[in-house]
Image 1 (cartoon, helix red, strand yellow):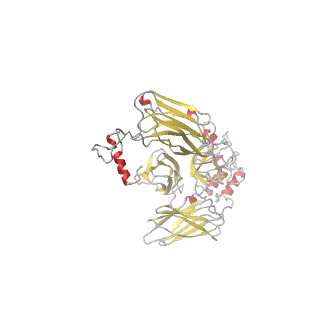
Image 2: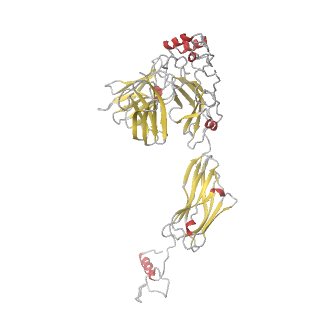
Image 3: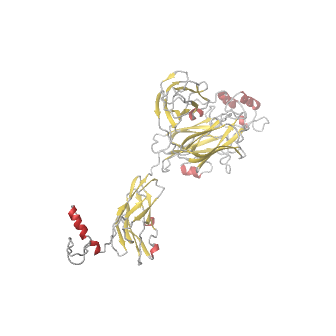
Length: 612
């Protein structure tokens, strides 16, 4: 190796001189004495490498496998490859056997070849392969063989390649860099949800549950069954008879696999982990619905269910006058009076009015129909008359914990981060920059309450929004988005928020600002709100990444009424408003309609009701 300029010049003069007598570096003999003039120099080196690819993989659960290829790389400086021997091993988080090593016939194009796997009886296996005879070998990069690993336990499993020998066509060694791989294993399911409750509503059931530790939860699977008509009609509601005429109460699944195998149970939603642990099942056909919820981690390990019996009606007992309006009023009492005292077989009997007694004697329990309309039914109507909102137990923080959260460049939301014991309304105020306007709308949480929600902005006052739940003796239950504010352009605000309780008294408020927009983790299509509606309703959905999206409204006969969206949308939360008109901008008739959202490979359909 030269250490100075003179020695480098000397090396340059002598490079390749290995034949003949001593050569004068000064060229006194007048002959050519460059090394390259005398020696055939063969560059038998290069950038060869052997690696397990992909270098990282996972996480995977214990029901999955992962496949790696042992890959050979060379360049123009590397001689052709005739054969190799490689020993493969792995750490205790993984396992594999001789049957998990597959010949990819990498030498098959060069004539006869040999491939063998040797069990070293220590958890490692040696793979030998070579071209038999022939005058050409492997010159390009290629996969030498394939490995399949089975997970055993949680952790970062390592795959090692050792004792690697590569040989050229003349059985000379080929040097190479060697690298293994890492496979992340997650075999532990998240814990089960607890305190699962279901509460009735008008064409919906409100679900709530507790998850003590959601750190390993990616999403929740929500399953539903209905008190049904039995074999062959496992998903058909037995409303309004239930325990008459031999209908069938669904069998509770003892685990997730039983739910998948059951004809009675249906997966209705994958809801992501967010600010709220709960779900609203908007479902119109009347019935007694049963629910089970499973926590699922990012590699589809599934926790245990909450267990029986979580069930509720999706209608108010006593709301019998059609069309159903979600209220028990004078018209419903008229229906009660018209059939009072009658039973099965009597000409004036109306089985929809047979709502009592209930399993807990309340107006919100499960009807135990007795095939006659009498005092038990009268008491249920009396309990629910003008007051069909269940009084949930007081619970939650005494102070509203609010988050001013950015949704996208021009949209913000005020979110109730934790349930509050007695929150009735909030007042949201902030001055706006010149030229900026805003619009407010009821958020998902307020729209899902049993009573009507109100949200409006005072004109000409910047942001000056009043938000409240209407109705005497009611307060906002649960957690989630109270109000959404859309600005005419991007703004950064620090609003002032005041809150009132059910007695119109002031509440202290905890308010934080979350300025970054949140990207949903998975696709979700929510029930339109309000529903029923007249004349407008909002359809909301989430996209985890940009997708081609179609949002279409259909009549009950399947005919297309209106195409609301047909094109690409970015990741994020989106809303589209239907104004009750068809593609010709003509008002449509009252009744049931369906909207379908297609987003890439995902698709969901929901029913909605236009009532004029």
